[in-house]
Length: 301
Image (cartoon, rainbow, N blue to C red; front, side):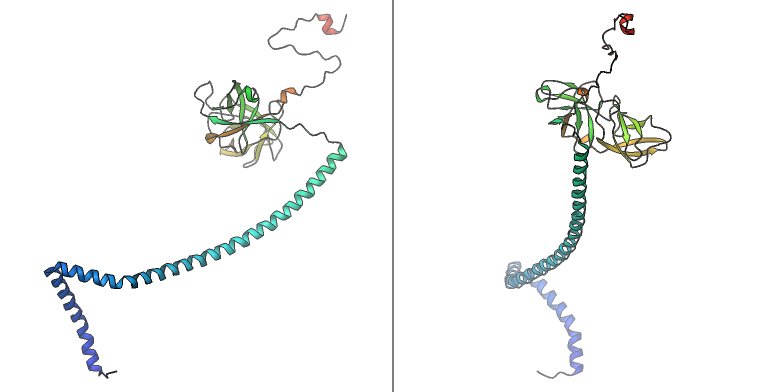
């Protein structure tokens, strides 16, 4: 190695920048004087550096891939730990559920429990309702040929949707719980108080006629009541929400604005008739007039 004095190094350092500037100016002038030669020289340099750029790009991609894999491995480790914790919790709840199921079965056996019959149901596709007297109703592609009858209960995936009001051979109209013509008895799950839920053509039906000493609680579940005999008890409807103080509404579980499929259940509520008591006088049909003699009504022959 040739020894160079400090003064020489300083002089060379001062000359580097001017030399580079002069070289750049010379290259620009040469490129303008002979553009074809400049293009050939540029392409020659690019061809020579292409393998180097390829190696650098490949190394960069590998480093990025390794970095991504390391981050993914860390995320998978945390996800695996979370899933293991969740699995342990589910196993504990599974053991509790099995224990409660066995206890329930034992109690039913001891009480000679008579289970309720499983309701029949059909599933149909929902189409837009192009007519009818209701503002909030849908048409179901299933009718009397499929076993659908007036009064059947329509359930969505998450909760109650409505009730069948009209039927055809291959279609049925379902009145949604948000329609202004919809009125049904409900029960508040927390307080077990009863109320009437009425639609008003908005997405949130109102709660009415509830006891003043058991006001609905924000967030509590609302289920159907079997007081009127039209619905079975316990069907999920939604949760209580207060839009304004003293004005409770129900936020339905079912997405009634985006219905695609509905299940129509026949719970057979109308088939459950009470037994006749001794001396019981049957009520007249609403379209007929009771014309029994007074002596007969009084039990005198």
